[in-house]
Length: 115
Image 1 (cartoon, helix red, strand yellow):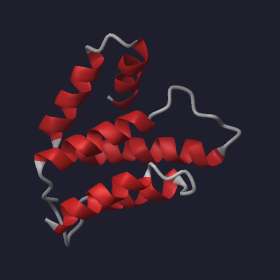
Image 2 (spheres, rainbow, N blue to C red; image 1 turned 30 degrees about the vertical axis):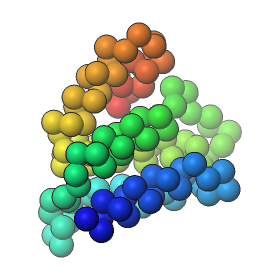
Image 3 (cartoon, rainbow, N blue to C red; image 1 turned 90 degrees about the vertical axis):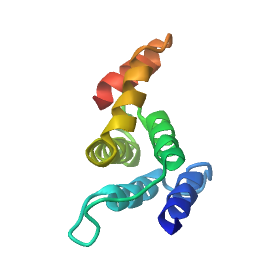
Image 4 (cartoon, rainbow, N blue to C red; image 1 turned 180 degrees about the vertical axis):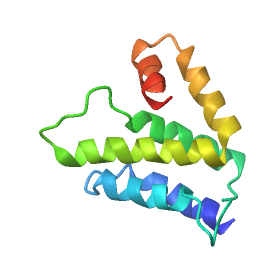
């Protein structure tokens, strides 16, 4: 339960303008990555859906290479999706497939980039 609250707290930090998103994404990626101490992370479905939703909105179609932090964040978010697909494959893949059926071409392209 503590991990669920912590992950939601991290996700809420994305709303703050004065915090570099890359560091938040890096922390989330670290939490999601399997380790010998924590081979399988236990998150409830609401948290998994929130992570997928928030991270999906951070994907950019064309990273701005003049701003290295945005490019780093883009790839760190992709790394988070890689960890999510490994740990919570059903919910993550289902969410991405749902986005592929979206009427918005931008959302479909973002889903394809992630897949």
